[in-house]
Image (cartoon, rainbow, N blue to C red; front, side, top):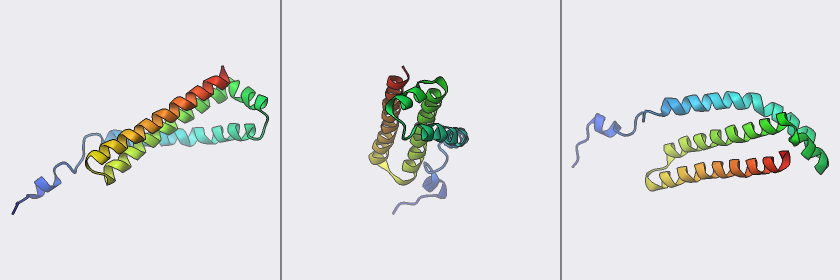
Length: 123
């Protein structure tokens, strides 16, 4: 029979020292996305349904291209941090590590592909 004190049962399950950092990042990125997404949706919506030349002309301008890049980067980093927090809450052991690496890898892959596509359009 093992005797565990309340302190021993709670060890490793409390604050890891990065909870505040994660919360602050998620809050700041959410506020930034709340301002960027409506403007981006308006720009994207106005380009939607137009011909190839008009879409390329829209995203070749600096403001739509920079805003699209920011939305892509901040949105995917927000996704990665949120997925990491969710995985940390519900997964254990090596599955947790693998899923966190998968979520971060997916977010960076989407960022890379999106930046490549944006560069092909804008340049």
